[in-house]
Amino acid sequence: MIGREGAIGGIVSQGRLPAYSRAEVQLGGDFFRIDLHHLEEAKVRSMTLRHLFARYADCMMAQVFQSVACNAAHSIEQRTAKWLLAAIERTGAPDLALTQEQLAAMLGVGRSYLSRVIRDLKERGVIDTGRARFGVRDIDGLRALACECNAATSRHFDDVLKGVYPAEENGLASARKPL
Image (cartoon, rainbow, N blue to C red):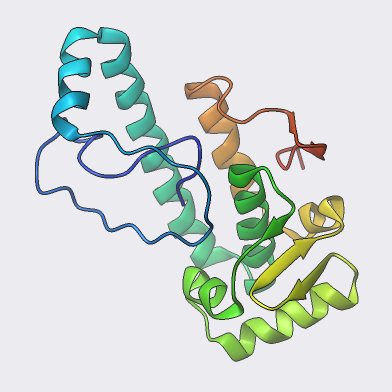
């Protein structure tokens, strides 16, 4: 998952092509597209920018490693809560325009199994849903259900890329409070 903290494409690999990535927008919002040639020129001129991309590459690897471990060790409920927290953290909004089918695909699970997890979260008052929408109503409750993987990854991002995740935005408490 990439949000306001990151980028995709050949930017991490020193612009070597082809980049091994495919992007699918799940949650809309503003984004910037920079021509690779212009970005590479800026990186040549700025050691700071080159180091920023190297640090970001480290963070992406940490996220990949943590995701693999999470998928092997944690329940669908924990992973669902973790993913919703990560999405809130990256968008800064408590409502996510997302279908259950899209969320099931992101988690690598069947929609029918995810539907049971979503129903349980709704019954607990943690989330509500609408047509192609998830709304988080109890972020502390969601945080309590989530595994520690999102918090661990966010701490690494904070250590390596200070200030990427604001502590509070749009009246939302940070989704990264220590567990």
